Length: 73
Image 1: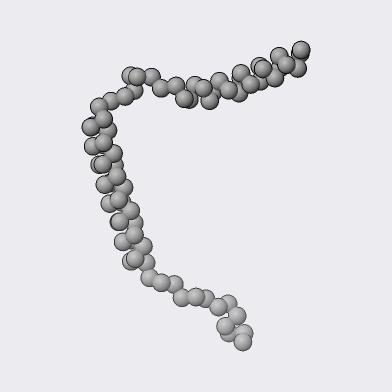
Image 2: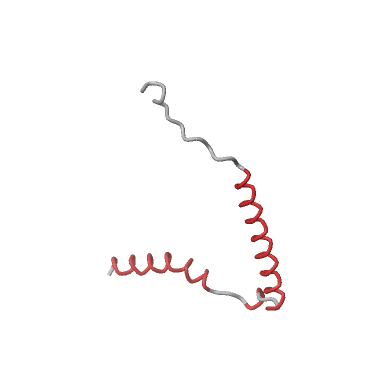
């Protein structure tokens, strides 16, 4: 009986955070059109940043492969 109580308590303690994360209150929801506009703007900004990153990588010159034993052969 004691083991059963301990196991049930452990399940309750470990299960509580998972249950709390799944609950969503209605007050957090905003207008869907505003969310989609925000998402579109964030996606466009992310794509612009990614393109700038790729362009910056293209400006870096290719490195020569180094052979540390080249002079020893």
